[in-house]
Amino acid sequence: MKPPGENIADAIHAATARGKPALIAFLTAGFPTKPAFQDALAQAAEVADVIEVGVPFSDPMADGLTIQHSSRIALEQGTTLEWTLSAIAAGRPTRSAPVLLMSYLNPLLSFGTAQLAVNARQAGVSGFIIPDLPFEECAELRQGFDAEGLALVQMVTPVTPQPRLALLARESRGFIYAVTMTGTTGHAVSAGSELLDYLRRIREVAALPVCAGFGIRSAAQVAALSGHVDGCIVGSALVEVLGHGQDVAAFLRGLRE
Image (spheres, rainbow, N blue to C red):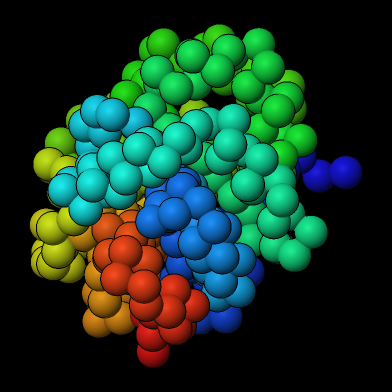
């Protein structure tokens, strides 16, 4: 049986084979309510190629106001990593899109690294994104993930030096997360020459798919990035849609137009 982490790249390649970047949909676990999140997870999986579930955390340093707010609301309702895994597991029979967990390090350490990878795989998680975990300090967690066939996605930014960019591209699993800007999530990004040059530098050293995230909010942005990335990660805009009670699947379909 193929390791679950390999399903991520497979799903992205399948999307690009159809001529458009893959869509990676970000949802905050437990937002706006626990039942609404579970419904949104099912809706997103109908359209998106990969799902990224954010584990709520009290100090989400890479996230802008939208995701900070969603995390606070989810935490107030008692959303934990344990509950998040159970919610993902509950939707597993009807979901084909691979699921990644995006979590800061503290919730993972509180859960316990010894059981984290095993429980995540059993729940149907294919990999992790951990924004505040430097590559030099990831050996223990990565060893556990490797043992269960889970991917640990590495993030690069426009200010990552080229030698380090090459290192992270080589060591990443699933895909390479190309942060489109310095700063936090939520601000719209423009596909200007500097961004496209940065994406070109990543693709020159990347064997895995390259997926762009931070600031992608519209079909026009997805179209502008087509041919420059293998996937687009949509977070704050989708969380806003969910917070307003709008149709998650319809919004994601609109990004493909």
